[in-house]
Image 1 (tube, rainbow, N blue to C red):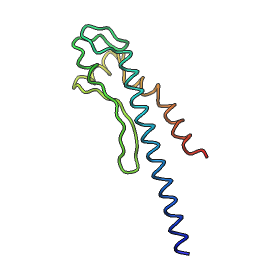
Image 2: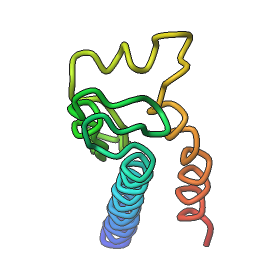
Image 3: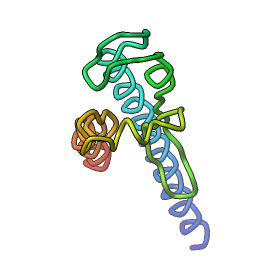
Image 4: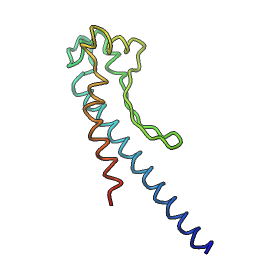
Amino acid sequence: MNSDMEKVKKKVKSIYDVRRAQIYGVSLQYAAMALNYFQSQQPARPAGKGKFWHNQTAQAAARVFAEAHRQADTIYWFMAHGVYYGVYLELANDRAHESIRPIVQRYAGRFIRDVKALYVD
């Protein structure tokens, strides 16, 4: 009987590991999609007018990044500014020129749907 229990435990662990890998893959995909969308809407060139703000130096637009991470039982993706003044771009003028939150919101529903689809057999 112990042998059967060990087989069940291994099978459950295998399913768990596969799901984690799949969710991480989906997270990588959505991080890339979000960053690609940002870059298509906010070109990183000086004095360029993008959808979100007017580039003065192009540093902020060039340093926006998106990544996926795995920490213990948590898997996620995110976007962030790589410049210290990115918070001002996002929050100034009652968020009139924010970029990150609208992009994350654009993809969040689809991301959740795609993760849930991994659990439907």
